[in-house]
Length: 382
Ligand code: MG
Image (tube, rainbow, N blue to C red; front, side, top):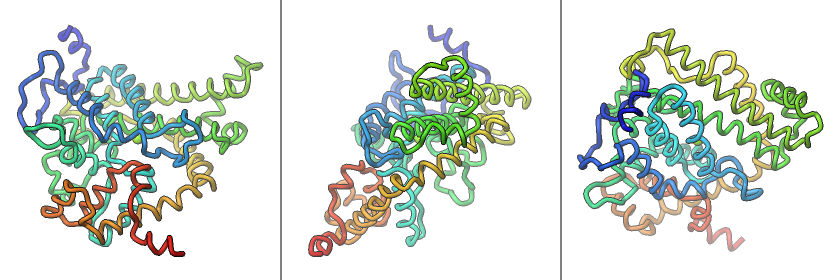
């Protein structure tokens, strides 16, 4: 069975036998390969379970079927597996990377990320959720007696930091081992477009369901969705609006994923990419939408920014969370002894602001709300 599966892998797929391996050597498992084990370790991690209580877009849950960061992650894993399989890539590695791709996200989605980044700047530092995810899997997950973190393979750690951005090697000497001048394998490259496809479709769905977006508005302003909807109307003119919307959304998702697969395959052929080394040294990222579809996708993104992410209801939820994060951060800067012992011990090796940032970033939305705040007493006196 093993030989059969491996022969399905394309020449440019990352083979588990070629992995650069783990930081701490471990005996092989009798029937799970290293990428399968990495995927399983991620699923069993605390940071993974916490995704359930981290905001994706809506801080307020309109209903239990709205996405949170965990269900979003499962959708990214589904799309990533599909794309990886269609391209002859390593689905185990792609799935592990999809499941881990958001574990570095702080509470309250992108607002949380922006606020922590702003709070770190006076110290000459930044907050980046990809780099934080690497710290989570390397340091903050404590499960094994023999080593800190999850001891993931090199390619999973590399994919965590490189799936959605490139780095200037000179600016990040601490990441030198991750071959910053090279692109990561295709299994890591496909995570970013899969992530974007997943949240674009999900946000249309949830935005419509929350009645923040109307069907007329989406059809009027997103040409790609309109084309899908017209087709559905032709086929099911009498179907209820909600079902037509669902059919059109399904078609939109399929159109984007199919384009991603076809465009990537075309690029691999045109640039004569035959090995992982070719992938690493290519001129640009290879797993991307075609140029015309990327344009359509940009319209969709702009629509979501202007009509959903900056909708007054979504914006109104954002403001109190900004203040909450600032006040909790300040509280622990002023009262480091209130940190849990694990984090307090870390202040001996690292500056306080970094430890506080790590602690706050690891919190769920709910847990953050339960924390003491810097000016709590002033607030209650008012
Ligand atoms: Mg994501």
